[in-house]
Image (cartoon, rainbow, N blue to C red):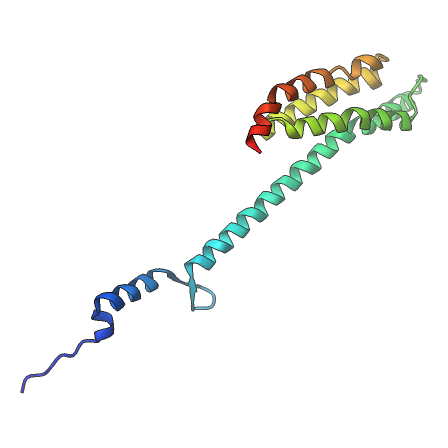
Length: 169
């Protein structure tokens, strides 16, 4: 007698067979659990991981920018300590005046820099340069009016980029 080979009609069916192959291609083995996880769940998880890492980068850049904005106050403390350590006396500004001036300079620069359409590293370098300018002319040299000069080019650059910024929203 001849043996009769029977095939699984479900897998050989033109519709169901392709559906099973498609469903099998959409599954991936989880190495820890040893079970199948749908690929769309993995892609959602990858999207969440990417969003989380983006938020972490944004937070670290924000902390660095806050430190740059606070640098004039920290520099004024260091400047006073340096001169007191050497035994020199000099006319120093009160730290509260430096704090108000630092916020009056740093916050507008930071807000304008945040709205500028430049790469993040370029924004950071411009912030550092503006803060160094401010520290030099506010704390080291008694030319306080010149310390606020970088606000003018930052405002002009923001006004030039404002139409592009509105078009991007």
